[in-house]
Image (cartoon, one colour):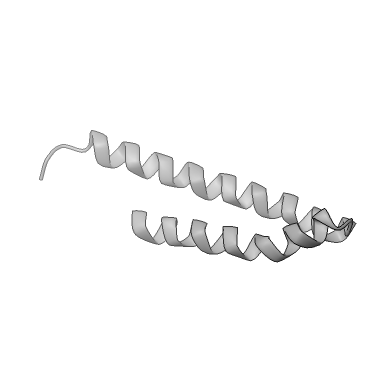
Length: 61
């Protein structure tokens, strides 16, 4: 599960690259997409953080 979330995070960051370049060039619509993607990245990162804490706090199997 943790690895799947991390791969999703990486994929989302890579997908944002093209829009980020466009936004840097002044494309307002691309800027909006980048902001939306950054929120998604934040959410995925938080999920990863929670899973890591759950793994750390779980009793040994």
